[in-house]
Length: 365
Image (tube, rainbow, N blue to C red; front, side, top):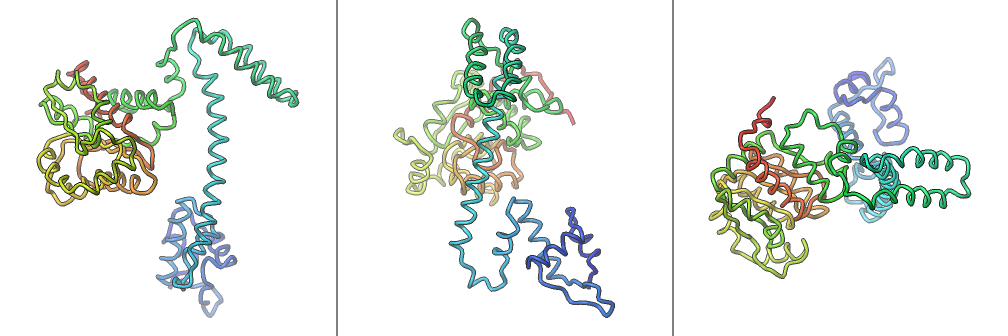
C-alpha cells in the first residue's frame, strides 16, 4: 500500500497530492481505503488508473471525458454521447487553431517581408498601433495596411530564403541537408509550422545518399508521386523508378486505398522492388502499413522509407508504426503529408547528393 505522496512519486509526470485529491472529488479516482491514522492508502490498480489518466491528459482529453472512458462497467458505457462530446471539443480546438493560424498569417505577412519590402514596415507597424484605439475602423485599417504593404511586392521577385530565415524555428543544430529538406517542404505547402512535425530517423540522410549513389530503385505508391519525382536527377544518378499502384486515373488517397485493397499483386512487387530501394509513399496509408508489416517480418529491407501518406486515422497509425521500426525513415506526425511533399523530400535528397557529393554534415553528433 502506498501513501498519497508515494503514489505521486511512483506515477511521476508532475502529478501532485493536490491533483490526486481533486480527482477523488470529481470521481475520476475512487475513494481510497484509510489507515488507522486516517491516511489515504493506494494499491497497484490505483497506480495503473492514475497512469491512464495521465496518459489521456497528455493526449489532450478533458477530465470529464477521461472519466467516461475509464468507467469500470464498460458494457454500459454509451460511446455515441462520448463521441459527440469529443467531436464538439475537436471543433472548439479547431476554431482556436484557426484563430491562431490567422494571427500567424498576419505575423508572416510582416516578418516575411524581404529587404526590398522592409521600407514599408515602419509605416505599416504605425498603422497597426492605430488598431488598438480605433476599433470601429479596424477593418478599414487592416485593409489599408495590407494594401500599403502589398504595393511593394509588385516590383521585384520574392526572396524566399530571407523570409524563411525569419520565420522558421531555430534549426542551427540540424544537419545542413536536413534543413534544406525542411525548407523546401515549407515552400511546397506554405505552412511554416510543418517543420515542427517532420521526423528523420538518425540514419535517414546517410542511408538515402548511399542508396542514391549506388543507383537504387525508387518506388512511388501512385503515378502522381512518381510523376513529381525529379527524373532527370535520378537518371543522372543511375536510379530507376517504379509505381506500385500503376493506375493513371487515380486522383485521391481514397482511390489509392481502394485500388490497393482490390489488387492482390502487391506482395510480389514488395519482394521484387523492396530490397535496397527507396519507397516514397504519399497517398495510400495502407501501402505504408503493409510495407511496415513486411519490414517487421524481415521479408524485405528498403534503404529508406519516405512515409507521408494522407489520412486521419490510418495514416497517423502507419507513421507511428514506421517510427518504431529499425529502418531509415522520413515521415511526419499526424495526418500531415501528401504526394507532392513526399516527392519533394526525395528530390531534395537527390539534388543535395549531386550538388554536394562530399558533404558530411549529417554525420555530426
